[in-house]
Image (cartoon, rainbow, N blue to C red; front, top):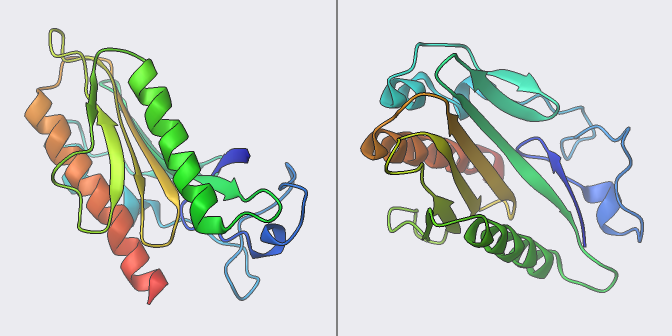
Length: 186
């Protein structure tokens, strides 16, 4: 299975029927063929950065992802583009990618939480937390949204952050990713 990190809401209609994967020059497009721009302000809200206790910093698009960079840490949100193998259903390929990402998080260390109980109904995913002793490190949430995308949310903290603050930010970020889907998936 081929996977690359691309921006949230990427639609790979042109690639899904082909045996080859996307090339480095591919640009995310909407169903009507227009280049897609990410709404990073809607995806990484000030509510999320406020929850972390970080200064208000505008979210910017970088390499098909949305991110906020501060001297205290970062927030990055993007999707993992999934190209099904020949003869494979897209939903099966997406589920395999989600499971592979959760296996990666599980193998990365002792801070694997599993599936958070606060994920919206019909949403599956997995979560790691910051090091509870230091309040630093990388918290990561990988989830499958209603657009059948694997969304990756990362919060590297350079300075200590309380676990409940990271949890509140992750809830907000996951909700924003699903809310964007609500409008685009209708």
